[in-house]
Length: 505
Image 1: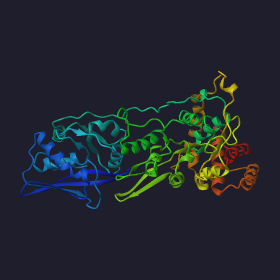
Image 2: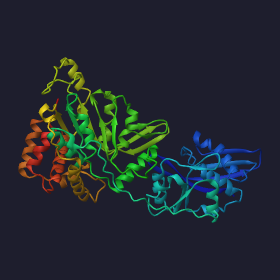
Image 3: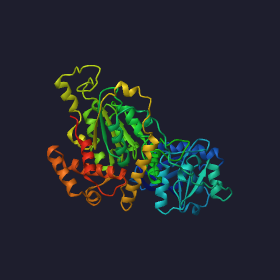
Image 4: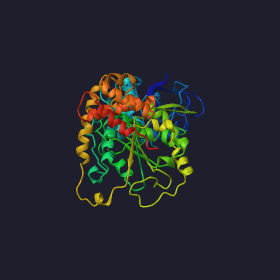
């Protein structure tokens, strides 16, 4: 009878159970793996053979057949090494087959039998738990990460020999307890160091509180990049669920820090204007998450956004609206989350000095050059921005002023209070902040009085707002009210939201 074990295949963040059957038949020694294995799985034959022998076990001198079921599901990566090796050893009668029941096994093998860590452990353990498995055997270096998923036994192993001894009951493995995680409050650029720019600071506070998209528009050296980086210091702390969401993406991408099992601070992903569309939305031979997914629950910063190729910018339209990205390639279709705050910065023209107050030089751009430059940002993309902020150079007298402004820590307290209000408001739904509201939630939570309705109706006609812009203003006003701790939206909140919505070109 062939030995049967269970492992997990990941396509993006989505898990699939894989049943591994190992059998043998008479004939000249040969090792076969069937079931749509990729090159990395095929190479497991060499790793498994050496690991089994170097761990002190006999390898059968016959035809060994490994079947990975379902046969029509593509199997990728080295995660099947450990279960295949255990299947071979079990087939030889060294391990009882019933010991594999309700157990998932994952791990890559070195030639000496050492079990190496793999990517995507968080998603794998979470999927194993959802399928009713009681325990999972995995590399010891992945143990802390795996322990963040409760109510499933984590069995960390260092090598193939230890794994066999554990299954035989001759070796105890350490009990892995979840590490106590505290949200990080790292501040790269403190708001108190930014001189002037009161309106921009206020806009960033609103953006942080409700996860609203913002476009910073101004001349070179006015402070656009500095303020964008200061935004990370006023973002609300992450909840445990948000940490798990983000960490699953980073685990699949192989970017999870080795010294901590979870991402504890909101991502801040600056994207250079030479980046390709694939690197931004995700893809590749084995489709992985792109920058928009790595910025999940954090900030995607696109400096000099008008320098990006137009076709690259247009790929952002769908994920900015749907908050998920589906990457379709020959090897399959993968879906990744991408709920991010877009922060973009741009100059008013190619040289950067058109219609700039206190500018030190004259604009040298022709009208055609300016028009071509502005058209790189399409109307649909601009319509997905919540706020447009004009940033002028700060006067010398303000720059020389030694008095500090309000600190990032102080502003963060307000954004966190506003986010707590939003979390309670949406506790019965899957959304977490105001920017994610759909029309149903807007109708329920953004009720306007007569004065506010009249003001918004007037603005709709005078500012030529689209339907999307109409609803975005209400969401923005809802966040402004939350920052003040008010349950009702007033005309003052609508007026401030409209102030940020005026397009600059």
